Image (cartoon, rainbow, N blue to C red; front, side, top):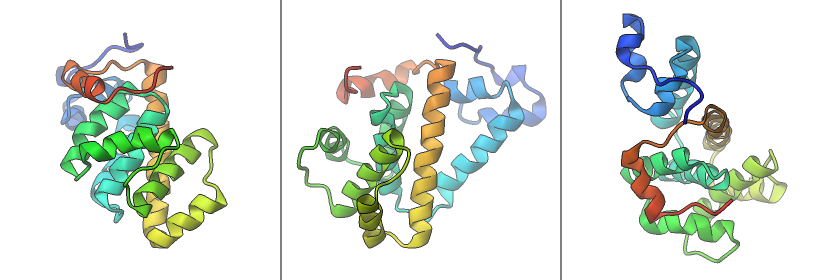
Length: 183
């Protein structure tokens, strides 16, 4: 159960109704501070709409952060979002396999992106080896965009966990289809 109540549009000033254009539990909790919600939303909008990084690679990185942190909310939401950007079911299964150190059929760029997401999530930084692999696949702008994306979603999963945001019922099926590792 969430630590803060979930607000609805009628709980907000009219100027803040746009903050709940996507009426999901994370946003419904964040709007307790409309200014913070708006600031977080601006960076999220850049990542999803204006970054030059390939959308599938971006979504793989986000899914890896969700998987690595055992964030049911982030992982389930981005399975749905990722599918809209070309992430296949095989890609999603490969996240678990890559995390376990198993061989996959993913291309080198995807493997490097997943490795970077795991390293930033657990070690707080990307190793030289992984950074060099990313530089082989991405130009400097896309590399920075990727690192910002991984850092942003590491912040989001920490907010989700601390606020104990509930996964909406319509996303639970994704967790049955692609279970997270047991804690």
